[in-house]
Image (cartoon, rainbow, N blue to C red; front, side):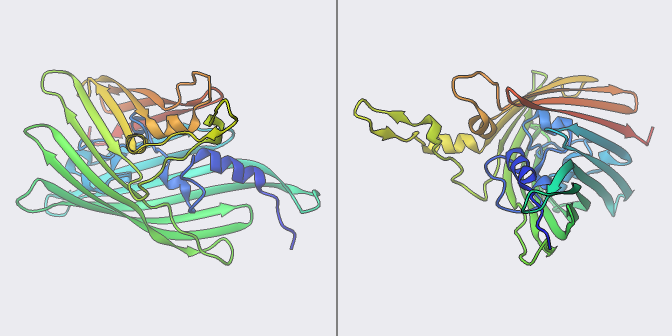
Length: 339
């Protein structure tokens, strides 16, 4: 059997998913799936409102306000890569409460295939898809909500196919008096049912904790997220940032406990979150540290976005900056089918 050279594909996917990528399969599951999430740093799961996209990340926030909300998103990503999501929630009754349905897909575009001698074998493509069903329940006599998603995953890379299954688990604390939310999520806990080849791979497990609060006298909602808690030490010394002493000794880039905490952190704010028009902005410390270019101001880690409501239609847009030559635009439309 002729072996296909997929080096270009592997390089692109490694760049797309940054330094924590490349260790597991189905990395597309950790891509920001909608503009609001992207504008708030890529890890939005501590919002407890009618945003039907949020349960794709944290099923504990599924609630009746999402009933008959239908949302679709599209992302013009790096190179020829594009991906998107769709989400819908339906309330059966007050006893059964609300079910959530979601789909996420990614299309890696076309690649040129060749055998080990460099002979062209034709173009090939790569596509991946995940379908989820979620449900949440209030823990009786408490302000805690627990939820779960069941996900079925399909992947095709050239002639290789793979299937997997996973669950997302979420726990959310909601304090209505302070308008404060805190959430802990464990995502992509599952197995690869069918491997691309002989060896099965791990799924991209993600454990994160987030908080958000609407300020009482200011039209601002703040967000703070600690992501990738499943791997505490995520900092590394970049050889390009090492310093040379006068004696020719190489001093590696210094790392610290506080820098490691910062690399887990995302901060974001929403201006006028309850209004028909709102603005969002955020800073992702890990993205900024990993993608910044020495001696250049690239604004890596910053994301901006806005949302507009028109009667039963809600439109969102976000722009995320990676470095001077790469960025991404996110679009979504949500329709309230109750109106």
